[in-house]
Image (cartoon, rainbow, N blue to C red; front, side):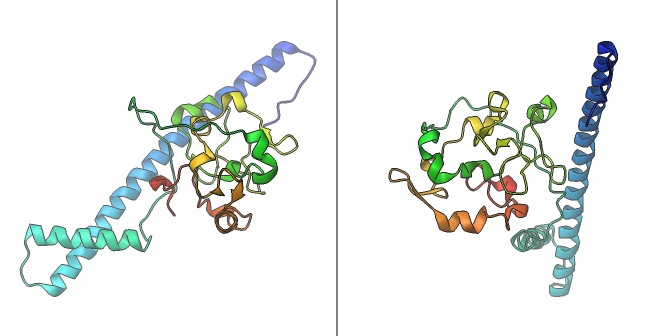
Amino acid sequence: MDIPTNHNPQENQAAESEVAQLEHQLTQSGFFTHTKLSQFAERINENEAFLFGLIDYLIDKTQISQEELQGYIAKVKEETHQKQEGLHPGIALRIDQTSKEKEAFTPVNCEERLPVCKAICCKLNFALSANEVESGKIKWELGKPYLIRHQQNGYCAHMDGEKKCCSIYEDRPKVCRGYSCANDQRIWKDFDKMVLNEEWIKENLTEKKMRLFAASMRPNDPELKQ
């Protein structure tokens, strides 16, 4: 949002403050709305699974027991999940683990690998945490809250195209801080020899498929399965 400027510093400061308050309120209202949508979606999925499970059971049986009925409901839930027919508002908010155990981190010389990888990790997707969203420093996808925002070319919205570096490096998300491509076989066929996994990258991170956001910063991330 552009703030009109004039020659009165106090008026400019007041306008910036009003805009900041408005953005904060919009963020808070978004959290509330999306939370409610998630709750409604969950209840609808439960009711749908119960209904279809009950119908299937009544067709096949003449007597009803709670144990058998629950089995039918579970079966329908699994089928719905496998066919990806479940209702979901497409919202993902990251909640970091509080465990004291830390994942092993392997440092990577990004500057050395940049000519080969072209910063491909900056095309990966992940959900932001509530604190990161509320900080106002990290952009998220308005059409798919609260995933990190991407440009049309597939790169993160905070990627500096000219310098090939992060424009908010000091305020980058926690996921970025803890990510290392050293053991990510989606990116490298051979990490030591710097051989990219061209097939996987072409299949998942091309501009044509970026709108699907199929690839998470964390391999096998259950929150981002399509």
